[in-house]
Image 1: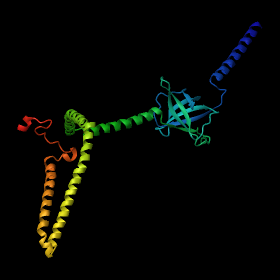
Image 2: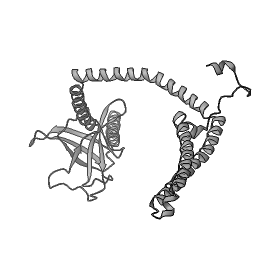
Image 3: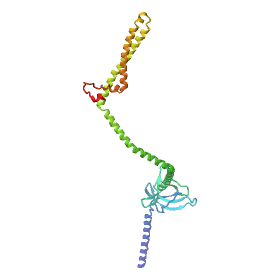
Image 4: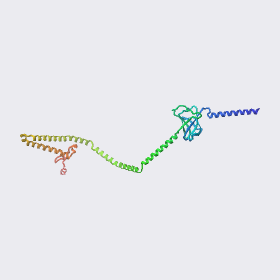
Length: 309
């Protein structure tokens, strides 16, 4: 009897241990959570993705990869069966992307939803719902990088075609001419600075004052010229009047008038001659005024050496 009771207790203990182990296994596998299964379809490489890899929805872990295999109906497709928590809203706008975690490079499935088609994803009868996989960030960078490299190669080829031997020689000649021109530019700038200094000295207050005085003297000189021209005009009118007088008295008085006119013409001619001579010998006198005459004997400033010269 005693042996039978010990065997019964051992059997009960083994049964309870088995039930506890089964419950622990179900709990560790998450059997208490309700999940839905989907199939991710892609024609791209899924290197680094393994079964039991994580499935994330907007960065949150919501499931795992159950199986990875080729499509028997279309070998170009790769079918990735995943299990996702039932409370995750998988819609017809949900897409999958292959992502990599941290620096370790462990691949996982990332589910994204654009929100444009909020209808729930429902599969056909007898099949699991299918989710399309889009290009990963690395694949997009690879394609963009390849296109960028091709464009850079085309640009380098075009640049090599432009910078041929003849064009390089022309560029060298142009640079040499620019260097020569820049070396000659220094003396030109120095000469310009010297000219500006001389112009500044010329246009000092004293010279400006002299210019104002000369301009004031030019006015009376021009007034004298106008008076001489008026006298010549009056004399001409008198001569025309004397010649055109047909009376006897006019003819008799012609000679005295002619004498007077001759005297006036002589005086006017001498004055006009002095003005013209002044303008011919020193035209700058119109602006700077008449120059003072050399002092004669007995006048202040007279020098015998200057008189001999």
